[in-house]
Image (tube, rainbow over all chains, first blue to last red; front, side, top):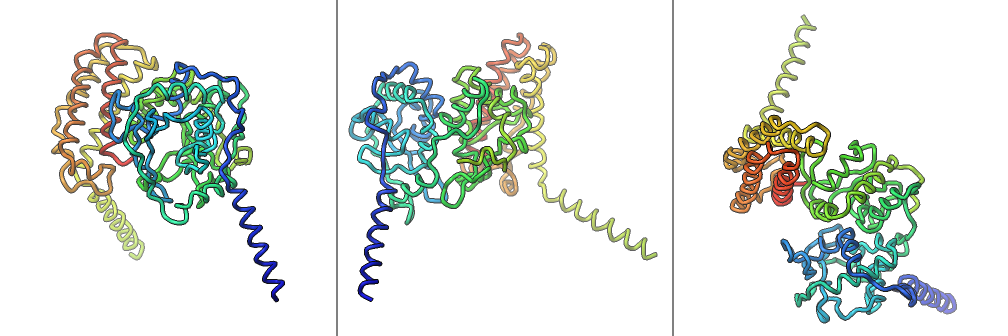
Amino acid sequence: MRRILMLLVLAAVIGAGIGLWLTRASGLSGDAFAGLTGDATRGKAVFTAAGCASCHYAPKAEGEAKLVLAGGQRFASDFGTFIAPNISSDATHGIGGWSLQDFGNAVMRGVSPEGKHYYPAFPYGSYAKMERQDVADLWAFVQTLPASDTPSQPHEIGFPFSIRRSVGGWKLLFFNEDWIMDAATPELERGRYLVEALAHCGECHTPRNALGGFESGQWLAGAPNPSGQGTIPALTPNALTWDAAEIAYYLESGFTPEFDSAGGHMVAVIENFAKLPAEDRAAVAAYVKALPEPGVAEVSGY
Amino acid sequence: MKRAIAAAVILSTLGGSFALAQGKVPFPVKARQGQMATMAMSLGVLGGMAQGKTEYDAAAAQAAANNLAGIAMIDPAIMWQDGTAEGTASLPAIWDDADGFAAEWAKFVAGAEKAAAEAGNGKDALGPILGALGGSCKSCHTAYRAN
């Protein structure tokens, strides 16, 4: 009896140890950015395409104030409310004291300089597919932005998700750097890079399972709005019948082919897309038009 | 006879539910939905020309812009009467933040006036007009429409 008990305790300790090891926060390798120098001018375009400001500027910021990444916007979800942190260049309250490696670990792996997990409300699951050079350029640009001494607020997350270690389990299950769609042409490749990585479209347009991972075979197939109000529309051909030019015009102007207009968070997305070259909007449109119907196995590998 | 009664019952049920469905939509809701549709149609004329889907026609562009300017003259307080939010995309903020809503409407009025003044000046005038009008659509829909 005692022996069985001892064995059980031993198994529990080993199990917990493996669990801790599996759910640890591991960043990029130490030489991930070796030999790369960031270019702030190029980084500005990456910044726009990645939509960093849209979530990190202060609530209701207008004009130039949108470049002050003071944080404070609230994002409701099934797991609680996430509050965007200060990522301005302030050394104390922002990320001014970081290195490129710290920045890369945060953006591409969701790992803080202290080695803690970030919640995937920060779309590092998409940014994981970014080119390292783009991350270096982005870091160069972000450092040029104004500092803000607004303290970051804690997320309002209930148990058990309040335990950051649980994010390790999420990563184990859902973190995946592989492309979701094939891209046969340079335009589709660019569209894929924008949709799947930088503009992180899937984060809202793909439905999630109970654990917060993308539902299999439902890439960009539409989802309930995590704010609880309304739905985020499907981009798949069963639902979206706009032609490529209409999609590109929507991303530029916010007008649907029927001349209804975008509202909500998509307005911020359009504000960013409107600043990108027309070829980028056309590339996104081409990618969207190439999407299969939901349920197709080829795109369920995430 | 039985058949006639059955037919009468079916007809009256259909008629009744039809009346009910109609009765469910308050008049101001119908009116503002029609107003929005008319705005979209007029914007579509300008947008189609701006995108090159249709050829620029100064008279048609001016007529569409005039429509928008006309719609801009309708008092929003008549269209968004208190108590008409239910079952529509209109958010309670329209009434809770009447000043903010009025400020958004004023942006549309400014855009429509710009359109009426400039739409006849050539195809290149349409981009800035659509930019101004589209900006007012987006900001108002973000704050006051369920998306």
